[in-house]
Length: 379
Image 1 (cartoon, rainbow, N blue to C red):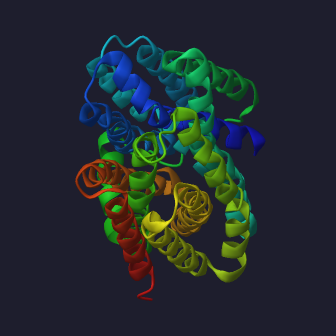
Image 2: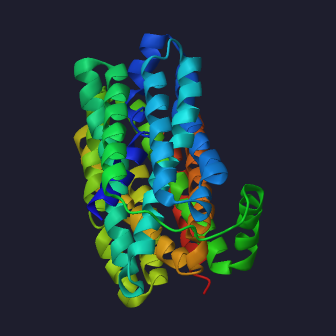
């Protein structure tokens, strides 16, 4: 479980390192803010594409081999980002990082496959803690490293961390028998069949996508908002908010335990309500002095991250229980929907921040979280 959690965390962190660095990247590469803002969107779109195109392979082939192949490709993509001579080259490398970082999603179904049914929620929650800490702490590490050594050094460090994960995985992770004999084309077609077959999968995918809109709108615009008046804070300060988010992520195993005892839908509804309330409160904080706004942002970050991550673990518990032979493909549907939501949140968040300010970004996030609650409250 420790290897699976670490592997998921270091892999998924690769797609978030750039977010606190957008200001310094844009300045060094002499790129306009709107174009630099597309870096996280390109990464998330690449991640969604990688989930669809590559995420099903672990149902057809030994999951251990799939993990090793993807990890090697991710190391190469990160090094290409470190060497990017222009923002356009960095955008292309970001797409490749997103595609190959989907190796993180091969670690999570491995936990579900190894876990007894009665404790699946807890085991998945444990591995998801590693993944979620990778998402959130990546911003902290990235901001600090970039301020000391430059943004390119962060991508080199990321490549080294993934290479270490690959070596340990090669030595320690057991082989997994294939769960399907379908060819590649049939595997891709089966994604639509699974979506049509299982109503709980459809609801989980839509609700998590809506939560992801708010999550991504917040994190994709936070650094730009803090860089401007009245805060004038750098990338390290923006990255430090990942510590607040990490506090919420640490509650992930508890969400899994509650899902095992009271049912995952119970967790989803509470989690979505918490996220909606946190976003609404942060959007209404503009009347506070700067210190008060920062304090409210820190508390709100803990609460909404707890909500979004708790809902994700509960949704994974739901979908992993639908068909044991198709866990990777079920995960592909859920996570593709989520990362499409993230890509939409990044794009919409950047536009709303430019034309409507921070309150408009938080209004979008609160409405999306409320929509997720409505989707899962109908039963």
